[in-house]
Image (cartoon, rainbow, N blue to C red):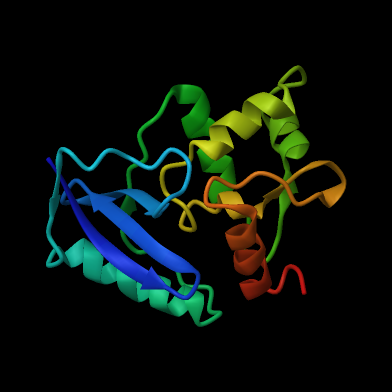
Length: 159
């Protein structure tokens, strides 16, 4: 069973989903790959929701909070490998799709990485907004380029 709560960020309403023990999803309302809400029960009282909301409060205040709760994204082995690399990108820094591809394999395509990044179910916490196109080009973000720009501004990565 999955539970949800909403978070009202300065850049848009966010859905947070948990299995009761870990965070399984963080999506901006209206973004690509937004989940079906059919089998999700609203429950604003889970302890993990309180933790993630405090984390998001600190993050949107421009801080770099530590994640002290479990994340449990669901995906293929390939996607999990990409999301692990995303989780290792430091606050305020970026990588390109090509750099991530080369970490995985000499023959990996940046487009395949882009597909995995775009399906990241835990936005912001698994920082897919820190991935740029070739030569640092601002490209691709399931929540919208406008939100990606705002998140990178918040991290003082761009002006």
